[in-house]
Image 1 (cartoon, rainbow, N blue to C red):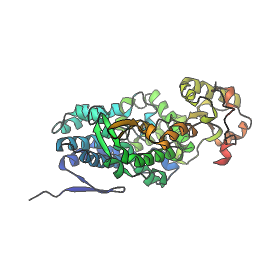
Image 2 (image 1 turned 180 degrees about the vertical axis):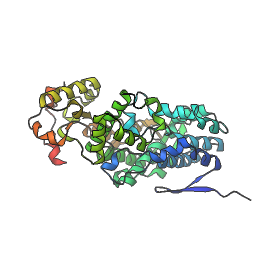
Image 3 (image 1 turned 180 degrees about the horizontal axis):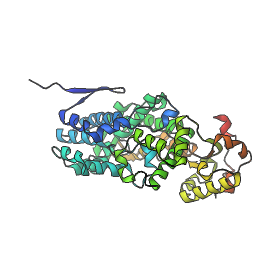
Image 4 (image 1 turned 30 degrees about the horizontal axis):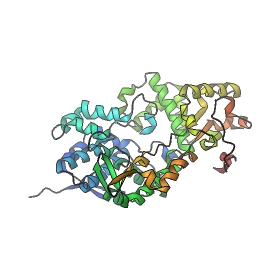
Length: 408
Protein backbone atom coordinates (compact mmCIF):
# COMPACT_ATOMS: atom_id res chain seq x y z
CA UNK A 1 0.00 0.00 0.00
CA UNK A 2 1.40 3.40 -1.06
CA UNK A 3 1.94 5.77 1.83
CA UNK A 4 -0.26 8.85 1.66
CA UNK A 5 1.67 12.05 0.83
CA UNK A 6 1.61 14.98 3.21
CA UNK A 7 0.74 18.49 2.05
CA UNK A 8 1.09 21.95 3.51
CA UNK A 9 -1.60 24.40 2.48
CA UNK A 10 0.25 27.56 1.52
CA UNK A 11 -1.46 30.94 1.19
CA UNK A 12 0.43 31.75 -2.04
CA UNK A 13 0.77 28.43 -3.94
CA UNK A 14 -1.94 26.20 -2.48
CA UNK A 15 -0.93 22.60 -1.64
CA UNK A 16 2.83 21.95 -1.33
CA UNK A 17 3.78 18.28 -1.04
CA UNK A 18 6.36 16.96 1.42
CA UNK A 19 8.17 13.65 1.60
CA UNK A 20 8.75 11.87 4.91
CA UNK A 21 12.32 13.12 5.25
CA UNK A 22 11.26 16.75 4.72
CA UNK A 23 8.58 16.26 7.38
CA UNK A 24 11.28 15.13 9.81
CA UNK A 25 13.41 18.19 9.01
CA UNK A 26 10.45 20.50 9.58
CA UNK A 27 9.66 18.82 12.90
CA UNK A 28 13.14 19.64 14.26
CA UNK A 29 13.10 22.44 16.88
CA UNK A 30 15.63 24.43 14.83
CA UNK A 31 13.09 24.63 12.00
CA UNK A 32 9.99 25.03 14.15
CA UNK A 33 11.62 28.15 15.64
CA UNK A 34 11.06 29.81 12.24
CA UNK A 35 7.30 29.78 12.92
CA UNK A 36 8.04 32.37 15.62
CA UNK A 37 10.14 34.70 13.48
CA UNK A 38 8.39 37.26 11.30
CA UNK A 39 9.59 37.35 7.72
CA UNK A 40 9.41 41.14 7.59
CA UNK A 41 10.45 41.92 11.14
CA UNK A 42 8.63 45.01 12.40
CA UNK A 43 6.87 45.90 9.15
CA UNK A 44 3.52 44.83 10.63
CA UNK A 45 3.66 48.23 12.40
CA UNK A 46 3.21 49.73 8.91
CA UNK A 47 1.31 46.94 7.13
CA UNK A 48 -0.76 45.04 9.73
CA UNK A 49 -1.05 41.95 7.51
CA UNK A 50 2.71 41.46 7.35
CA UNK A 51 2.78 38.84 10.11
CA UNK A 52 3.94 35.94 7.92
CA UNK A 53 6.96 34.00 9.07
CA UNK A 54 10.31 32.64 7.93
CA UNK A 55 8.71 29.19 8.19
CA UNK A 56 6.24 30.03 5.41
CA UNK A 57 8.94 31.63 3.28
CA UNK A 58 11.25 28.61 3.57
CA UNK A 59 8.47 26.21 2.58
CA UNK A 60 7.58 28.49 -0.36
CA UNK A 61 11.22 28.70 -1.46
CA UNK A 62 11.42 24.90 -1.36
CA UNK A 63 8.33 24.73 -3.56
CA UNK A 64 9.79 27.08 -6.20
CA UNK A 65 13.19 25.41 -5.94
CA UNK A 66 11.53 22.09 -6.67
CA UNK A 67 9.66 23.52 -9.68
CA UNK A 68 12.85 25.06 -11.09
CA UNK A 69 14.98 21.95 -10.45
CA UNK A 70 12.37 19.81 -12.21
CA UNK A 71 12.20 22.27 -15.14
CA UNK A 72 16.00 22.08 -15.42
CA UNK A 73 15.68 18.29 -15.74
CA UNK A 74 17.95 17.59 -12.77
CA UNK A 75 18.27 14.09 -11.35
CA UNK A 76 15.98 13.00 -8.53
CA UNK A 77 18.88 13.17 -6.06
CA UNK A 78 19.67 16.73 -7.18
CA UNK A 79 16.02 17.76 -6.92
CA UNK A 80 15.85 16.43 -3.36
CA UNK A 81 19.11 18.23 -2.47
CA UNK A 82 17.78 21.53 -3.90
CA UNK A 83 14.48 21.12 -2.04
CA UNK A 84 16.23 20.50 1.29
CA UNK A 85 18.70 23.36 0.77
CA UNK A 86 15.88 25.76 -0.10
CA UNK A 87 13.91 24.58 2.93
CA UNK A 88 16.88 25.27 5.23
CA UNK A 89 18.31 28.39 3.56
CA UNK A 90 17.09 30.73 6.34
CA UNK A 91 17.25 28.38 9.35
CA UNK A 92 19.94 30.56 10.94
CA UNK A 93 17.99 33.82 10.81
CA UNK A 94 17.84 35.70 14.09
CA UNK A 95 14.73 37.26 15.65
CA UNK A 96 12.85 39.68 13.42
CA UNK A 97 14.91 38.39 10.47
CA UNK A 98 17.09 41.01 8.76
CA UNK A 99 16.40 43.58 11.48
CA UNK A 100 18.60 41.78 14.01
CA UNK A 101 21.14 40.88 11.33
CA UNK A 102 21.98 44.58 10.98
CA UNK A 103 23.55 44.50 14.46
CA UNK A 104 25.42 41.21 14.28
CA UNK A 105 29.05 40.86 13.28
CA UNK A 106 28.24 38.01 10.86
CA UNK A 107 25.52 37.33 8.24
CA UNK A 108 22.64 34.91 8.80
CA UNK A 109 24.21 32.50 6.28
CA UNK A 110 27.00 31.87 8.83
CA UNK A 111 24.42 30.94 11.45
CA UNK A 112 22.62 28.73 8.93
CA UNK A 113 25.91 26.95 8.32
CA UNK A 114 26.33 26.48 12.08
CA UNK A 115 22.82 25.07 12.54
CA UNK A 116 23.24 22.69 9.60
CA UNK A 117 26.74 21.47 10.54
CA UNK A 118 27.07 21.83 14.32
CA UNK A 119 23.67 21.07 15.88
CA UNK A 120 21.45 17.99 16.05
CA UNK A 121 20.12 19.00 12.62
CA UNK A 122 23.34 17.58 11.15
CA UNK A 123 22.66 14.09 12.51
CA UNK A 124 19.35 13.99 10.66
CA UNK A 125 20.61 15.52 7.40
CA UNK A 126 23.55 13.13 7.18
CA UNK A 127 21.16 10.22 6.86
CA UNK A 128 20.64 11.40 3.28
CA UNK A 129 22.97 14.29 2.33
CA UNK A 130 26.45 15.70 2.68
CA UNK A 131 25.78 18.77 4.83
CA UNK A 132 28.57 20.67 3.04
CA UNK A 133 26.59 20.40 -0.20
CA UNK A 134 23.64 22.05 1.54
CA UNK A 135 25.85 24.84 2.92
CA UNK A 136 27.31 25.47 -0.55
CA UNK A 137 23.88 25.77 -2.16
CA UNK A 138 22.64 28.10 0.58
CA UNK A 139 25.67 30.31 -0.17
CA UNK A 140 25.18 30.19 -3.94
CA UNK A 141 28.23 28.03 -4.58
CA UNK A 142 28.68 25.16 -7.02
CA UNK A 143 26.54 24.09 -9.95
CA UNK A 144 23.24 24.11 -8.03
CA UNK A 145 23.90 27.17 -5.83
CA UNK A 146 22.41 29.82 -8.18
CA UNK A 147 18.98 28.14 -7.93
CA UNK A 148 18.61 29.14 -4.26
CA UNK A 149 21.06 32.03 -3.98
CA UNK A 150 21.86 33.77 -7.24
CA UNK A 151 20.76 36.68 -9.35
CA UNK A 152 17.30 35.46 -10.32
CA UNK A 153 16.84 32.86 -7.59
CA UNK A 154 13.82 31.17 -6.03
CA UNK A 155 14.45 32.90 -2.68
CA UNK A 156 13.82 36.33 -4.26
CA UNK A 157 10.84 35.08 -6.24
CA UNK A 158 9.13 33.73 -3.13
CA UNK A 159 9.71 36.72 -0.89
CA UNK A 160 8.42 39.15 -3.53
CA UNK A 161 5.26 37.10 -4.02
CA UNK A 162 4.75 36.42 -0.31
CA UNK A 163 5.55 39.91 0.95
CA UNK A 164 3.26 41.46 -1.65
CA UNK A 165 0.47 39.02 -0.76
CA UNK A 166 0.68 39.71 2.97
CA UNK A 167 1.25 43.47 2.91
CA UNK A 168 -1.45 44.08 0.33
CA UNK A 169 1.05 46.02 -1.80
CA UNK A 170 0.34 44.86 -5.34
CA UNK A 171 3.78 45.65 -6.78
CA UNK A 172 5.26 42.26 -5.89
CA UNK A 173 3.04 40.16 -8.17
CA UNK A 174 5.42 38.42 -10.61
CA UNK A 175 5.02 35.78 -13.30
CA UNK A 176 7.29 33.25 -11.62
CA UNK A 177 6.09 30.35 -13.78
CA UNK A 178 7.16 32.18 -16.95
CA UNK A 179 10.56 32.96 -15.44
CA UNK A 180 11.10 29.37 -14.25
CA UNK A 181 10.11 27.88 -17.61
CA UNK A 182 12.69 30.05 -19.39
CA UNK A 183 15.71 29.39 -17.18
CA UNK A 184 18.58 27.01 -17.94
CA UNK A 185 21.58 26.13 -15.79
CA UNK A 186 25.11 26.45 -17.09
CA UNK A 187 27.62 28.71 -15.33
CA UNK A 188 24.78 30.19 -13.30
CA UNK A 189 21.15 30.56 -14.31
CA UNK A 190 20.68 31.69 -17.91
CA UNK A 191 17.44 33.36 -18.98
CA UNK A 192 16.04 32.68 -22.44
CA UNK A 193 15.02 35.76 -24.42
CA UNK A 194 11.37 34.61 -24.13
CA UNK A 195 11.53 35.14 -20.37
CA UNK A 196 12.83 38.72 -20.48
CA UNK A 197 9.42 40.35 -20.11
CA UNK A 198 8.65 38.33 -16.98
CA UNK A 199 12.11 39.17 -15.57
CA UNK A 200 11.47 42.85 -16.29
CA UNK A 201 8.24 42.56 -14.33
CA UNK A 202 10.07 40.99 -11.37
CA UNK A 203 12.68 43.73 -11.29
CA UNK A 204 10.14 46.53 -11.63
CA UNK A 205 8.21 44.87 -8.79
CA UNK A 206 11.25 44.83 -6.54
CA UNK A 207 12.07 48.42 -7.50
CA UNK A 208 8.68 49.56 -6.25
CA UNK A 209 8.60 47.25 -3.22
CA UNK A 210 11.69 48.96 -1.86
CA UNK A 211 10.20 52.41 -1.13
CA UNK A 212 6.75 50.97 -0.42
CA UNK A 213 7.75 48.18 1.99
CA UNK A 214 11.40 47.24 2.53
CA UNK A 215 12.82 50.78 2.71
CA UNK A 216 9.67 52.69 3.64
CA UNK A 217 10.69 55.60 5.87
CA UNK A 218 8.75 54.20 8.85
CA UNK A 219 10.20 50.72 8.30
CA UNK A 220 13.67 52.19 8.49
CA UNK A 221 13.16 54.03 11.77
CA UNK A 222 11.43 51.16 13.60
CA UNK A 223 14.31 48.92 12.46
CA UNK A 224 16.85 51.50 13.66
CA UNK A 225 15.14 51.79 17.05
CA UNK A 226 15.08 48.01 17.48
CA UNK A 227 18.71 47.63 16.38
CA UNK A 228 19.95 50.26 18.81
CA UNK A 229 18.21 48.45 21.67
CA UNK A 230 19.51 45.04 20.50
CA UNK A 231 23.07 46.36 20.29
CA UNK A 232 22.73 47.62 23.85
CA UNK A 233 21.68 44.22 25.22
CA UNK A 234 24.50 42.52 23.28
CA UNK A 235 27.10 45.07 24.44
CA UNK A 236 25.96 44.61 28.04
CA UNK A 237 26.21 40.80 27.72
CA UNK A 238 22.51 40.36 28.42
CA UNK A 239 22.51 38.07 25.39
CA UNK A 240 25.39 36.55 23.42
CA UNK A 241 25.22 37.32 19.71
CA UNK A 242 26.64 33.87 18.90
CA UNK A 243 23.48 32.36 20.39
CA UNK A 244 21.07 34.55 18.45
CA UNK A 245 19.97 31.57 16.32
CA UNK A 246 18.36 30.10 19.45
CA UNK A 247 16.05 33.07 20.07
CA UNK A 248 12.70 33.92 18.52
CA UNK A 249 10.82 37.23 18.32
CA UNK A 250 8.98 36.70 21.61
CA UNK A 251 12.24 35.94 23.46
CA UNK A 252 13.77 39.26 22.42
CA UNK A 253 10.60 41.22 23.18
CA UNK A 254 10.57 39.69 26.66
CA UNK A 255 14.22 40.55 27.22
CA UNK A 256 13.66 44.13 26.04
CA UNK A 257 10.65 44.59 28.31
CA UNK A 258 12.19 43.14 31.45
CA UNK A 259 15.92 43.87 31.35
CA UNK A 260 17.39 46.49 33.69
CA UNK A 261 18.38 48.92 30.93
CA UNK A 262 15.96 51.87 30.92
CA UNK A 263 16.73 52.85 27.31
CA UNK A 264 15.94 49.35 26.04
CA UNK A 265 12.72 49.28 28.11
CA UNK A 266 11.68 52.65 26.66
CA UNK A 267 12.39 51.66 23.05
CA UNK A 268 10.28 48.53 23.50
CA UNK A 269 7.45 50.55 25.05
CA UNK A 270 7.61 52.93 22.09
CA UNK A 271 7.45 50.04 19.61
CA UNK A 272 4.67 48.34 21.60
CA UNK A 273 2.56 51.50 21.46
CA UNK A 274 3.72 52.73 18.05
CA UNK A 275 5.28 55.91 19.41
CA UNK A 276 7.81 56.06 16.62
CA UNK A 277 10.54 58.66 16.02
CA UNK A 278 9.61 61.29 13.44
CA UNK A 279 11.57 62.65 10.49
CA UNK A 280 12.89 66.18 10.72
CA UNK A 281 15.04 66.11 7.58
CA UNK A 282 15.07 64.07 4.38
CA UNK A 283 17.40 64.43 1.38
CA UNK A 284 16.93 62.21 -1.64
CA UNK A 285 20.21 60.74 -2.83
CA UNK A 286 19.57 61.71 -6.43
CA UNK A 287 20.00 65.28 -5.22
CA UNK A 288 23.73 64.57 -5.28
CA UNK A 289 26.03 64.43 -8.30
CA UNK A 290 27.54 61.16 -7.07
CA UNK A 291 24.95 59.47 -4.81
CA UNK A 292 27.17 56.38 -4.37
CA UNK A 293 29.45 58.51 -2.15
CA UNK A 294 26.78 58.44 0.56
CA UNK A 295 27.55 54.76 1.11
CA UNK A 296 31.18 55.58 1.92
CA UNK A 297 30.14 57.46 5.06
CA UNK A 298 31.30 55.37 8.02
CA UNK A 299 28.93 54.34 10.80
CA UNK A 300 31.25 56.12 13.24
CA UNK A 301 30.78 59.39 11.30
CA UNK A 302 27.00 59.02 11.47
CA UNK A 303 27.16 58.32 15.20
CA UNK A 304 29.39 61.37 15.77
CA UNK A 305 26.91 63.53 13.84
CA UNK A 306 24.02 62.15 15.92
CA UNK A 307 25.86 63.04 19.12
CA UNK A 308 26.62 66.57 17.90
CA UNK A 309 22.97 67.12 16.88
CA UNK A 310 21.84 65.82 20.27
CA UNK A 311 24.18 68.19 22.09
CA UNK A 312 23.16 71.23 20.00
CA UNK A 313 19.44 70.57 20.35
CA UNK A 314 19.39 69.39 23.96
CA UNK A 315 18.32 65.78 23.27
CA UNK A 316 19.60 62.48 24.66
CA UNK A 317 22.10 61.19 22.05
CA UNK A 318 20.42 57.77 22.01
CA UNK A 319 17.25 59.37 20.62
CA UNK A 320 18.74 60.94 17.48
CA UNK A 321 18.87 58.64 14.44
CA UNK A 322 20.50 59.31 11.07
CA UNK A 323 19.51 56.64 8.58
CA UNK A 324 20.62 56.07 4.99
CA UNK A 325 18.40 53.73 2.97
CA UNK A 326 20.10 50.49 1.96
CA UNK A 327 22.17 50.49 -1.22
CA UNK A 328 19.84 49.57 -4.13
CA UNK A 329 21.81 46.63 -5.50
CA UNK A 330 19.29 44.84 -7.77
CA UNK A 331 21.65 41.96 -8.60
CA UNK A 332 19.06 40.52 -10.98
CA UNK A 333 20.21 43.13 -13.50
CA UNK A 334 23.38 41.05 -13.97
CA UNK A 335 21.37 38.02 -15.17
CA UNK A 336 22.71 36.60 -18.44
CA UNK A 337 20.20 36.32 -21.30
CA UNK A 338 20.57 33.78 -24.11
CA UNK A 339 19.91 35.24 -27.56
CA UNK A 340 20.54 32.88 -30.50
CA UNK A 341 23.25 31.06 -28.57
CA UNK A 342 25.04 34.19 -27.34
CA UNK A 343 24.88 35.63 -23.81
CA UNK A 344 24.18 39.26 -22.95
CA UNK A 345 23.57 41.00 -19.60
CA UNK A 346 19.89 41.76 -18.97
CA UNK A 347 20.70 45.49 -18.86
CA UNK A 348 21.81 45.34 -22.53
CA UNK A 349 18.78 43.37 -23.68
CA UNK A 350 16.12 45.39 -21.87
CA UNK A 351 15.69 49.17 -22.10
CA UNK A 352 13.46 48.96 -19.02
CA UNK A 353 16.18 47.30 -16.93
CA UNK A 354 18.75 49.75 -18.26
CA UNK A 355 16.50 52.62 -17.15
CA UNK A 356 16.02 51.00 -13.71
CA UNK A 357 19.79 50.76 -13.33
CA UNK A 358 20.03 54.53 -13.77
CA UNK A 359 16.90 55.31 -11.75
CA UNK A 360 17.68 53.22 -8.67
CA UNK A 361 19.06 56.22 -6.75
CA UNK A 362 15.66 57.92 -7.13
CA UNK A 363 14.51 55.71 -4.26
CA UNK A 364 16.99 56.04 -1.36
CA UNK A 365 17.39 59.01 0.94
CA UNK A 366 19.17 60.07 4.09
CA UNK A 367 16.84 60.99 6.92
CA UNK A 368 17.14 62.33 10.46
CA UNK A 369 14.66 61.13 13.10
CA UNK A 370 13.98 62.37 16.64
CA UNK A 371 11.19 61.85 19.20
CA UNK A 372 7.95 63.53 18.13
CA UNK A 373 7.99 65.85 21.14
CA UNK A 374 11.41 67.22 20.04
CA UNK A 375 10.44 67.82 16.42
CA UNK A 376 9.44 71.46 16.97
CA UNK A 377 13.09 72.37 17.66
CA UNK A 378 14.22 71.45 14.12
CA UNK A 379 12.55 74.13 11.99
CA UNK A 380 15.79 75.41 10.41
CA UNK A 381 17.86 72.26 10.76
CA UNK A 382 20.67 71.73 8.23
CA UNK A 383 22.23 68.28 8.04
CA UNK A 384 25.31 69.51 6.16
CA UNK A 385 26.35 71.34 9.33
CA UNK A 386 27.03 67.90 10.84
CA UNK A 387 27.98 65.64 7.92
CA UNK A 388 30.26 66.10 4.93
CA UNK A 389 27.64 65.41 2.25
CA UNK A 390 28.43 64.87 -1.46
CA UNK A 391 28.13 67.77 -3.89
CA UNK A 392 24.58 68.75 -4.83
CA UNK A 393 23.79 68.38 -8.54
CA UNK A 394 22.43 71.84 -9.30
CA UNK A 395 22.26 71.39 -13.08
CA UNK A 396 19.79 68.51 -13.03
CA UNK A 397 16.13 69.39 -12.62
CA UNK A 398 14.61 67.82 -9.53
CA UNK A 399 10.98 67.78 -8.63
CA UNK A 400 12.10 66.96 -5.13
CA UNK A 401 13.08 70.28 -3.60
CA UNK A 402 9.91 70.23 -1.59
CA UNK A 403 9.53 69.05 1.95
CA UNK A 404 8.94 65.31 1.71
CA UNK A 405 7.65 65.23 5.23
CA UNK A 406 4.61 67.20 4.05
CA UNK A 407 4.14 64.93 1.05
CA UNK A 408 4.10 61.74 3.12
